[in-house]
Length: 401
Image: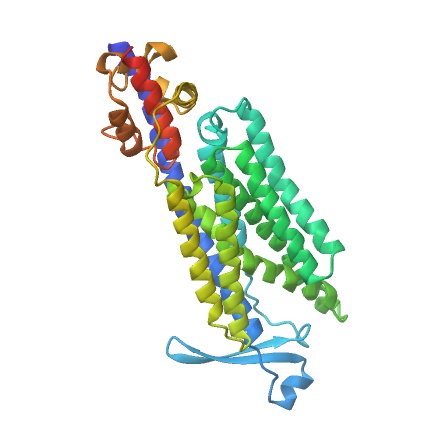
């Protein structure tokens, strides 16, 4: 008994350290994402609210637009130059670390929560995909998303065609991720792909364009406006991507959404609603307010909620042999065997109670897995309701046999 307790200590320490790392990365990720999204919202509003300068001296100096704002107990006068000011200012505020920190902290969370635990969190239950292969697929999809997006932007100049192809790409990515990964990981994978595109836009296109303006002025030559225009286009794209990515960041707390039937389609619809919301506000910034747009978005959300809820209205059917088989795979991959004893799974864990001895009912197993108790964590955010039901069916049918 003593040896089992000693052997369990490193595991407990490892879990504790991972939990603290998870907390720290999540905190940093949320802070950085809030800053990045807020900056994106503000600068698109600013750019679309600019008016022609009234002072002739400003126009002669190259000012293309200006905006008066009131905030924080005072007035602000913001000006944007067509290309660059006659002289570089002594101080320039840069907006890049919000994007970099968001992506780096998000990728860190992918490593801690999904790549290091790929067998239980990334691989789709019942899949024959090796965990390391799933990780490689995930990384490859992140890179492929940026490459495809960047090439597409350089080849397609028509905005309607570009956005149509981008939408088709999101649909294919959502479906493909659903086929490859666990439901929760599939949603996050799509969000990570879009987030990678957003961060790469900043790193590869937007910031280099800014440096091009600065170096041209330092060299005493007129800057080329083309890279700046491309940077603006990518910045606007990022603005429309913000709410879909934010959705996938939050979705891990809502198993009823990512665990729904055809959840990849649910994800696509919610992302479209998010882009639709940004379109409403961006049109409003230029004086075109269409109140039917938020009404239509709300109606689409309500219809989706009703449809998804109806898919779960029927009573759960009795456990089948296939449910038990899937439950065994989830039991092994989710780490249950490391803490419990269950002869059918050849599990000899002693951290938690022996399931062979306890012979729990399916409802009790489902409750413990879903809610947790004592040292046992809740798996509600890691497993879908269907996966929890499969584990419960497996444990109750084998432990009582």
